[in-house]
Image (cartoon, rainbow, N blue to C red):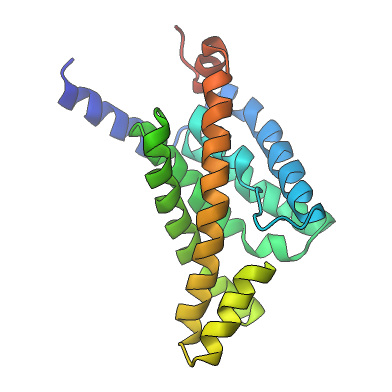
Length: 204
């Protein structure tokens, strides 16, 4: 099989959006990782959310559906138990799960040097989805102090609220997704190959 055939097969497997039985066993663990990481960040008032770590790992291990479902469920559960605000961003988590799986399939998480551009792209997608939600529900703010300070400064200078909100969200997402991307990369690299193949539903 030549490189073009392999590439075509990879694209087909991604867009088929199949969820293997093995992948389904990963979702509860990914939700738990998201939940604990986000609670940890909020409890310590960190300048990042960390609530997508499980989503990253699920997407990298088992593909887009597992990642999207993990992120969505976590936002709903977290919103019902600790922070109602979180539920609104379930759509953002779905987007993150899809784009992480897409980037992983194209090798962005194989080397440290390519993790950063992947994080930038993921942050951009996250900001694009989250900005309308921020404007609709929270007058453009994110709830993170230093990001909202940037928002307030831009609004005071008569910058359009949508642009100010996007920049507020993007700078926060850039930091958060870079930290999470490298954490996910390091964890993924330490996993036994047999476990990786198990969640991908393949034999090796």
